[in-house]
Length: 96
Image 1 (cartoon, rainbow, N blue to C red):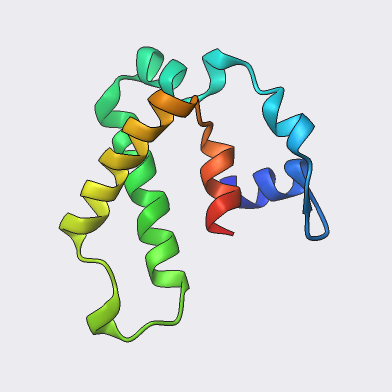
Image 2 (spheres, one colour; image 1 turned 135 degrees about the vertical axis):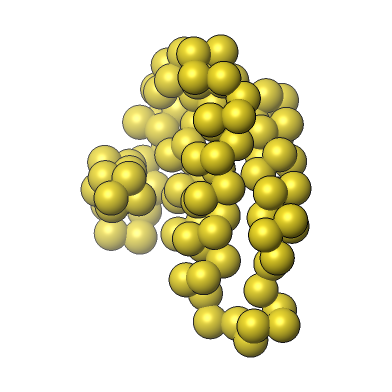
């Protein structure tokens, strides 16, 4: 549901509306969300996004990410988000 809303709002056809994406306030980006909802909750959100992405692509089971690797990737995304002020919408659009 979140994915659909983000795509509907920030993407027209195959084109991403970067101006609109860049206009997301800092408090609504991942570092701001961590301050409001705490790190564990945002990690869970990113983990679920990774899990959905992992199971949506057609790969053999042996090539899919394990639960541990998805959790580590969610941590890495949180670190990147702090450096680059990423929003959840940035990650959703990247995965799509």
